[in-house]
Structures are given as C-alpha cells and as structure tokens.
Length: 117
Image 1 (spheres, rainbow, N blue to C red):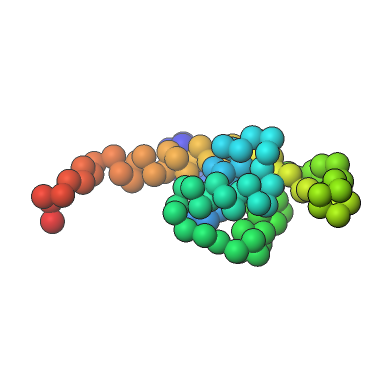
Image 2: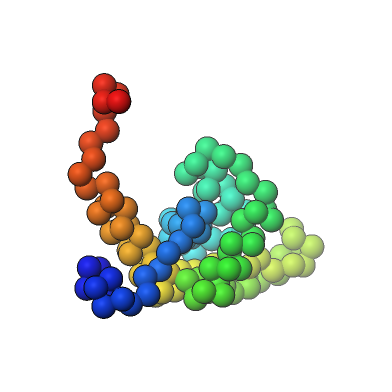
C-alpha cells in the first residue's frame, strides 16, 4: 500500500455509501440484489435508504469496474421480470482492501475511551 502511494499510483477512493454497498455485496455473496442490499445496509447502519438512493451508487460502482451484474431468471412473483444481481470484481475486492488498510493506518494510534475528551 505504501509503495503504491510513493509511486503516485492512483488509489481507489470510495464514498462511505460506496464502501457500505461493496461490503454488502461481499456479505450477501450470490444473493446481492437491490432489495437484499437495502436490507443489509439497514442492518449495517440502522438507517433506511430508498431504493433509488442505493441504485445510483450501484450503477456508479459498476461503471468504475468494482461491480459486475447479471440478470437472474424471470419469475412470476415479479410479473415476469428478472432480478439484477451484483458481484464484486477483482477491482472491487482490491478497492475494499485498500480502504481497509487506509482506515487501519488512520486509526492506528487512536484509542477512544469514554473518559478521554
């Protein structure tokens, strides 16, 4: 990681929402689609987001190459519509690893306790 920065190679920077979505896709494995991702994000954060609020960054992450998608089989339950599933790409795994390392470096020397102000 340090070598990448020293050589001025481009590091993947993610918004908090993008990071949460990539982690949700990772956690859901082969069951990552819009509705399950929304539920997982709520589980992570305790906050509810509209489907549109999740869909836009999903498309952005796909355009960046961090996610790929595929359509499942159409079902009668969905009126014959197929579900769009998401998967992490190698770039997506790499981006999550980079952000994890960045967080670890940033928090390395901090110990938070209730009595510190």
